[in-house]
Length: 330
Image (tube, rainbow, N blue to C red; front, side, top):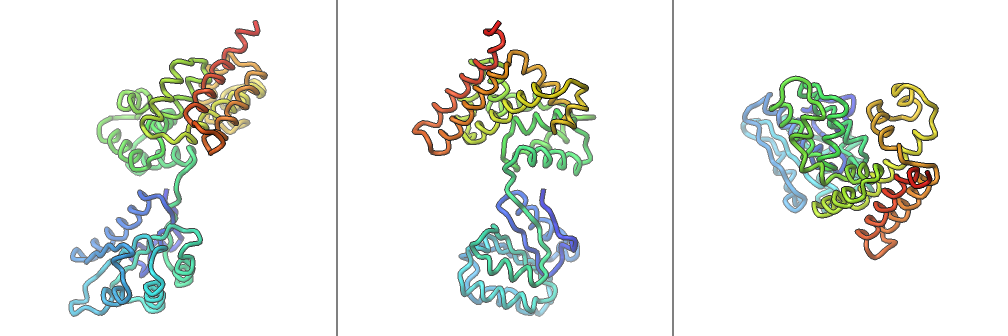
Protein backbone atom coordinates (compact mmCIF):
# COMPACT_ATOMS: atom_id res chain seq x y z
CA UNK A 1 0.00 0.00 0.00
CA UNK A 2 1.28 3.39 -0.91
CA UNK A 3 2.24 5.46 2.13
CA UNK A 4 1.79 9.21 1.99
CA UNK A 5 3.20 12.13 3.92
CA UNK A 6 1.07 13.98 6.44
CA UNK A 7 0.47 16.85 3.98
CA UNK A 8 -1.66 14.75 1.66
CA UNK A 9 -3.16 17.27 -0.76
CA UNK A 10 -3.14 15.72 -4.25
CA UNK A 11 -3.19 19.24 -5.69
CA UNK A 12 0.07 20.23 -3.99
CA UNK A 13 2.47 21.87 -6.49
CA UNK A 14 4.75 18.81 -6.39
CA UNK A 15 4.06 15.14 -5.75
CA UNK A 16 6.99 12.75 -5.49
CA UNK A 17 6.14 9.05 -5.89
CA UNK A 18 9.13 6.92 -4.85
CA UNK A 19 9.52 3.20 -5.43
CA UNK A 20 9.33 0.45 -8.02
CA UNK A 21 5.84 -0.95 -7.53
CA UNK A 22 4.16 -0.04 -10.83
CA UNK A 23 0.59 -0.38 -9.56
CA UNK A 24 1.20 1.99 -6.65
CA UNK A 25 3.05 4.47 -8.89
CA UNK A 26 0.13 4.47 -11.32
CA UNK A 27 -2.34 4.97 -8.49
CA UNK A 28 -0.33 7.93 -7.20
CA UNK A 29 -0.65 9.52 -10.64
CA UNK A 30 -4.34 8.65 -10.94
CA UNK A 31 -5.10 10.25 -7.57
CA UNK A 32 -3.52 13.53 -8.62
CA UNK A 33 -5.24 13.53 -12.01
CA UNK A 34 -8.62 12.73 -10.46
CA UNK A 35 -8.26 15.56 -7.94
CA UNK A 36 -7.21 18.00 -10.65
CA UNK A 37 -10.13 17.08 -12.89
CA UNK A 38 -12.53 17.32 -9.97
CA UNK A 39 -11.33 20.90 -9.56
CA UNK A 40 -11.30 21.58 -13.31
CA UNK A 41 -12.79 19.10 -15.77
CA UNK A 42 -10.65 20.58 -18.56
CA UNK A 43 -7.35 19.87 -16.83
CA UNK A 44 -4.59 19.18 -19.34
CA UNK A 45 -2.53 16.07 -18.44
CA UNK A 46 0.92 15.48 -19.92
CA UNK A 47 2.48 12.10 -19.13
CA UNK A 48 6.15 12.04 -20.14
CA UNK A 49 9.03 9.57 -20.23
CA UNK A 50 12.64 10.77 -19.80
CA UNK A 51 13.27 10.85 -23.55
CA UNK A 52 10.21 13.08 -24.04
CA UNK A 53 11.37 15.62 -21.46
CA UNK A 54 14.25 17.36 -23.18
CA UNK A 55 16.03 20.50 -21.93
CA UNK A 56 13.56 23.37 -22.26
CA UNK A 57 10.46 21.13 -22.47
CA UNK A 58 9.43 21.64 -18.84
CA UNK A 59 9.70 25.43 -19.15
CA UNK A 60 7.49 25.28 -22.23
CA UNK A 61 4.90 23.09 -20.52
CA UNK A 62 4.76 25.23 -17.38
CA UNK A 63 4.80 28.66 -19.03
CA UNK A 64 1.76 30.89 -18.27
CA UNK A 65 -1.26 30.11 -20.44
CA UNK A 66 -3.57 32.67 -21.97
CA UNK A 67 -6.51 30.77 -20.51
CA UNK A 68 -4.84 30.00 -17.14
CA UNK A 69 -5.75 26.32 -17.50
CA UNK A 70 -4.97 23.75 -14.82
CA UNK A 71 -2.32 21.29 -15.84
CA UNK A 72 -0.79 18.08 -14.49
CA UNK A 73 2.70 17.21 -15.72
CA UNK A 74 3.80 13.64 -14.97
CA UNK A 75 7.47 12.69 -15.33
CA UNK A 76 8.11 8.94 -15.21
CA UNK A 77 11.46 7.33 -14.35
CA UNK A 78 12.81 10.67 -13.15
CA UNK A 79 16.04 8.97 -12.09
CA UNK A 80 16.83 8.53 -15.81
CA UNK A 81 16.56 12.20 -16.80
CA UNK A 82 19.57 13.77 -18.50
CA UNK A 83 21.79 16.11 -16.48
CA UNK A 84 20.56 19.18 -18.41
CA UNK A 85 16.91 18.24 -17.86
CA UNK A 86 17.56 17.67 -14.16
CA UNK A 87 18.87 21.26 -13.99
CA UNK A 88 15.60 22.45 -15.55
CA UNK A 89 13.52 20.49 -13.05
CA UNK A 90 15.53 21.74 -10.07
CA UNK A 91 15.15 25.32 -11.29
CA UNK A 92 11.39 24.81 -11.61
CA UNK A 93 11.16 23.43 -8.07
CA UNK A 94 12.40 26.78 -6.76
CA UNK A 95 9.49 28.65 -8.35
CA UNK A 96 6.60 26.32 -9.27
CA UNK A 97 3.85 27.73 -11.46
CA UNK A 98 0.31 28.25 -10.23
CA UNK A 99 -2.43 25.90 -11.38
CA UNK A 100 0.20 23.31 -12.32
CA UNK A 101 0.90 20.07 -10.47
CA UNK A 102 4.18 18.33 -11.21
CA UNK A 103 4.34 14.59 -10.45
CA UNK A 104 7.79 13.01 -10.36
CA UNK A 105 8.02 9.21 -10.37
CA UNK A 106 11.40 8.09 -9.04
CA UNK A 107 12.64 4.55 -8.43
CA UNK A 108 14.58 5.58 -5.33
CA UNK A 109 18.14 4.46 -4.70
CA UNK A 110 21.38 6.14 -5.66
CA UNK A 111 20.68 6.92 -9.31
CA UNK A 112 19.23 10.40 -9.67
CA UNK A 113 19.47 10.98 -5.91
CA UNK A 114 20.27 14.66 -6.40
CA UNK A 115 16.86 15.26 -7.94
CA UNK A 116 15.19 13.17 -5.24
CA UNK A 117 16.85 15.25 -2.51
CA UNK A 118 15.97 18.51 -4.26
CA UNK A 119 12.30 17.54 -4.53
CA UNK A 120 12.15 16.66 -0.85
CA UNK A 121 13.89 19.89 0.10
CA UNK A 122 11.32 21.78 -1.97
CA UNK A 123 8.57 20.32 0.27
CA UNK A 124 7.18 17.73 -2.10
CA UNK A 125 4.18 15.70 -1.08
CA UNK A 126 5.69 12.22 -1.04
CA UNK A 127 4.03 8.89 -1.78
CA UNK A 128 6.04 5.74 -0.99
CA UNK A 129 5.48 2.95 -3.53
CA UNK A 130 7.89 0.19 -2.46
CA UNK A 131 8.07 -3.16 -4.19
CA UNK A 132 6.19 -5.71 -2.08
CA UNK A 133 8.57 -8.65 -1.82
CA UNK A 134 7.26 -10.18 1.42
CA UNK A 135 4.17 -12.40 1.48
CA UNK A 136 3.00 -10.57 4.62
CA UNK A 137 3.04 -7.26 2.73
CA UNK A 138 0.96 -8.71 -0.09
CA UNK A 139 -1.48 -10.19 2.43
CA UNK A 140 -1.87 -6.77 4.06
CA UNK A 141 -2.39 -5.27 0.60
CA UNK A 142 -5.22 -7.70 -0.20
CA UNK A 143 -6.93 -6.97 3.12
CA UNK A 144 -6.68 -3.22 2.49
CA UNK A 145 -8.15 -3.66 -1.01
CA UNK A 146 -11.20 -5.44 0.39
CA UNK A 147 -11.59 -2.74 3.06
CA UNK A 148 -11.34 0.00 0.45
CA UNK A 149 -14.22 -1.63 -1.43
CA UNK A 150 -16.25 -1.93 1.76
CA UNK A 151 -16.21 -5.72 1.63
CA UNK A 152 -15.55 -8.37 4.25
CA UNK A 153 -13.18 -11.27 3.54
CA UNK A 154 -11.96 -13.89 6.01
CA UNK A 155 -8.22 -14.12 6.80
CA UNK A 156 -8.21 -17.55 5.18
CA UNK A 157 -9.70 -16.11 1.99
CA UNK A 158 -7.12 -13.34 1.83
CA UNK A 159 -4.29 -15.82 2.34
CA UNK A 160 -5.74 -18.18 -0.27
CA UNK A 161 -5.89 -15.34 -2.78
CA UNK A 162 -2.24 -14.42 -2.17
CA UNK A 163 -1.28 -18.10 -2.45
CA UNK A 164 -3.20 -18.43 -5.71
CA UNK A 165 -2.21 -15.23 -7.48
CA UNK A 166 1.36 -14.75 -6.29
CA UNK A 167 3.38 -11.54 -6.32
CA UNK A 168 1.70 -9.49 -9.07
CA UNK A 169 -0.10 -6.63 -7.30
CA UNK A 170 -2.14 -5.71 -10.37
CA UNK A 171 -3.53 -9.23 -10.56
CA UNK A 172 -4.20 -9.29 -6.83
CA UNK A 173 -6.08 -5.98 -7.04
CA UNK A 174 -8.02 -7.23 -10.07
CA UNK A 175 -8.95 -10.46 -8.29
CA UNK A 176 -10.21 -8.54 -5.24
CA UNK A 177 -12.32 -6.30 -7.49
CA UNK A 178 -13.77 -9.31 -9.31
CA UNK A 179 -14.66 -11.13 -6.10
CA UNK A 180 -16.18 -7.99 -4.59
CA UNK A 181 -18.33 -7.49 -7.69
CA UNK A 182 -19.43 -11.11 -8.10
CA UNK A 183 -19.89 -12.39 -4.54
CA UNK A 184 -22.47 -11.30 -1.99
CA UNK A 185 -21.77 -11.40 1.73
CA UNK A 186 -18.48 -12.38 3.34
CA UNK A 187 -15.87 -13.75 0.94
CA UNK A 188 -14.40 -16.98 2.31
CA UNK A 189 -11.71 -19.47 1.32
CA UNK A 190 -14.16 -21.70 -0.54
CA UNK A 191 -15.17 -18.83 -2.82
CA UNK A 192 -11.54 -18.02 -3.62
CA UNK A 193 -10.93 -21.70 -4.35
CA UNK A 194 -13.82 -21.82 -6.85
CA UNK A 195 -12.55 -18.76 -8.69
CA UNK A 196 -8.84 -19.44 -8.66
CA UNK A 197 -8.31 -23.19 -8.41
CA UNK A 198 -6.17 -23.24 -11.54
CA UNK A 199 -3.96 -20.45 -10.27
CA UNK A 200 -3.58 -22.07 -6.88
CA UNK A 201 -2.01 -25.10 -8.56
CA UNK A 202 0.85 -22.84 -9.66
CA UNK A 203 1.43 -21.28 -6.27
CA UNK A 204 4.73 -21.51 -4.44
CA UNK A 205 2.78 -21.99 -1.23
CA UNK A 206 0.90 -24.92 -2.74
CA UNK A 207 4.28 -26.53 -3.44
CA UNK A 208 5.29 -25.97 0.18
CA UNK A 209 1.98 -27.22 1.61
CA UNK A 210 2.07 -30.44 -0.39
CA UNK A 211 5.75 -31.02 0.49
CA UNK A 212 5.37 -30.58 4.26
CA UNK A 213 2.30 -32.83 4.14
CA UNK A 214 4.48 -35.59 2.64
CA UNK A 215 2.55 -35.64 -0.67
CA UNK A 216 5.55 -36.03 -2.95
CA UNK A 217 3.82 -36.52 -6.31
CA UNK A 218 1.43 -33.60 -5.79
CA UNK A 219 4.26 -31.36 -4.55
CA UNK A 220 6.33 -32.12 -7.65
CA UNK A 221 3.35 -31.51 -9.92
CA UNK A 222 2.69 -28.16 -8.24
CA UNK A 223 6.39 -27.30 -8.53
CA UNK A 224 6.40 -27.95 -12.28
CA UNK A 225 3.25 -25.86 -12.72
CA UNK A 226 4.83 -23.04 -10.74
CA UNK A 227 8.01 -23.01 -12.81
CA UNK A 228 6.06 -23.33 -16.07
CA UNK A 229 3.92 -20.30 -15.22
CA UNK A 230 6.85 -18.09 -14.30
CA UNK A 231 7.00 -18.28 -10.49
CA UNK A 232 10.53 -17.28 -9.46
CA UNK A 233 12.52 -20.20 -7.95
CA UNK A 234 13.54 -17.98 -5.03
CA UNK A 235 9.84 -17.51 -4.16
CA UNK A 236 9.46 -21.30 -3.99
CA UNK A 237 12.46 -21.76 -1.69
CA UNK A 238 11.08 -18.97 0.49
CA UNK A 239 7.71 -20.73 0.73
CA UNK A 240 9.40 -24.05 1.51
CA UNK A 241 11.45 -22.39 4.26
CA UNK A 242 8.34 -20.81 5.79
CA UNK A 243 6.50 -24.12 5.72
CA UNK A 244 9.28 -26.10 7.41
CA UNK A 245 10.00 -23.37 9.98
CA UNK A 246 6.32 -23.22 10.90
CA UNK A 247 6.42 -26.97 11.60
CA UNK A 248 9.51 -26.52 13.78
CA UNK A 249 8.09 -23.55 15.68
CA UNK A 250 4.81 -25.25 16.49
CA UNK A 251 6.52 -28.53 17.43
CA UNK A 252 8.64 -26.69 19.99
CA UNK A 253 5.83 -24.56 21.40
CA UNK A 254 3.86 -25.18 24.55
CA UNK A 255 0.38 -26.58 24.09
CA UNK A 256 -2.57 -24.24 24.18
CA UNK A 257 -5.38 -22.64 22.27
CA UNK A 258 -4.69 -21.44 18.69
CA UNK A 259 -5.13 -17.84 19.81
CA UNK A 260 -2.49 -18.22 22.55
CA UNK A 261 -0.06 -20.00 20.23
CA UNK A 262 -0.69 -17.39 17.55
CA UNK A 263 0.48 -14.65 19.92
CA UNK A 264 3.49 -16.70 21.03
CA UNK A 265 4.63 -17.70 17.53
CA UNK A 266 3.52 -14.68 15.52
CA UNK A 267 1.12 -16.66 13.33
CA UNK A 268 -2.59 -16.09 12.66
CA UNK A 269 -4.83 -18.61 14.51
CA UNK A 270 -6.07 -20.21 11.29
CA UNK A 271 -2.49 -21.01 10.32
CA UNK A 272 -1.91 -22.70 13.70
CA UNK A 273 -4.72 -25.12 12.86
CA UNK A 274 -3.31 -25.79 9.39
CA UNK A 275 0.24 -26.40 10.63
CA UNK A 276 -1.04 -28.71 13.37
CA UNK A 277 -2.55 -30.92 10.66
CA UNK A 278 0.62 -30.79 8.59
CA UNK A 279 3.04 -31.67 11.39
CA UNK A 280 1.64 -35.09 12.28
CA UNK A 281 4.37 -37.11 10.56
CA UNK A 282 7.30 -34.91 11.59
CA UNK A 283 10.15 -35.54 14.04
CA UNK A 284 12.82 -33.07 15.25
CA UNK A 285 15.39 -34.87 13.10
CA UNK A 286 13.05 -34.59 10.12
CA UNK A 287 12.78 -30.82 10.60
CA UNK A 288 16.57 -30.53 10.71
CA UNK A 289 16.94 -32.55 7.51
CA UNK A 290 14.28 -30.46 5.77
CA UNK A 291 15.89 -27.16 6.80
CA UNK A 292 19.23 -28.33 5.37
CA UNK A 293 17.48 -29.27 2.15
CA UNK A 294 15.91 -25.82 1.90
CA UNK A 295 19.26 -24.14 2.52
CA UNK A 296 20.90 -26.22 -0.21
CA UNK A 297 18.08 -25.44 -2.64
CA UNK A 298 18.25 -21.73 -1.82
CA UNK A 299 21.97 -21.73 -2.62
CA UNK A 300 21.28 -23.67 -5.80
CA UNK A 301 18.68 -21.24 -7.16
CA UNK A 302 20.81 -18.21 -6.28
CA UNK A 303 23.73 -19.22 -8.44
CA UNK A 304 25.37 -21.94 -6.39
CA UNK A 305 24.25 -24.69 -8.77
CA UNK A 306 23.85 -25.31 -12.47
CA UNK A 307 20.21 -26.41 -12.43
CA UNK A 308 17.75 -24.52 -10.17
CA UNK A 309 14.88 -26.82 -11.20
CA UNK A 310 16.79 -29.91 -10.09
CA UNK A 311 17.74 -28.20 -6.81
CA UNK A 312 14.06 -27.49 -6.12
CA UNK A 313 12.92 -31.01 -7.04
CA UNK A 314 15.56 -32.50 -4.75
CA UNK A 315 14.46 -30.26 -1.88
CA UNK A 316 10.77 -31.08 -2.39
CA UNK A 317 11.45 -34.83 -2.37
CA UNK A 318 13.63 -34.55 0.74
CA UNK A 319 11.06 -32.44 2.62
CA UNK A 320 8.19 -34.76 1.69
CA UNK A 321 10.24 -37.75 2.89
CA UNK A 322 11.07 -35.93 6.15
CA UNK A 323 7.34 -35.26 6.64
CA UNK A 324 6.84 -39.01 6.93
CA UNK A 325 9.82 -39.59 9.25
CA UNK A 326 7.70 -40.34 12.33
CA UNK A 327 5.96 -43.19 10.56
CA UNK A 328 9.28 -44.70 9.46
CA UNK A 329 10.76 -44.32 12.95
CA UNK A 330 7.88 -46.31 14.37
